[in-house]
Length: 153
Image (cartoon, rainbow, N blue to C red; front, side, top):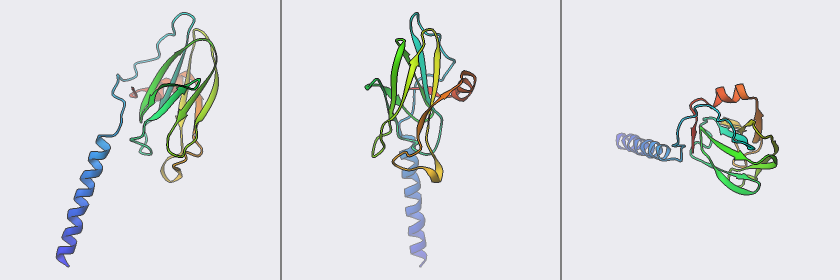
């Protein structure tokens, strides 16, 4: 019986180390930390999309699409800045797997920045289909506060 307990401890250590290696090698944002919103260029609008840190989908980057075309990736605790031409645009996130595209239509106003947060249920409410996920508009002061410490991809 002592050997059996020892084997469980041995395999437990191996599984713990494997989990730690897996988490440490997961996709993370490696760009510079958010230092503030840049002023949009002449005749442009700025869109900031961010995702705060969470254990749910920690190692899963999400594809970001703008008007149906790839615009980048959104990893755990990261943000993406998209300079846009003024007008109506569609911002989408593709979580992957069985999850559908999550979309928001937006009006890009020249000379202004708009902030969006990708939110989804976590902990016991997390589902592989990302039910309840959304792209939510944030007011600038709140977004700037929540984006502190996030990194670009």
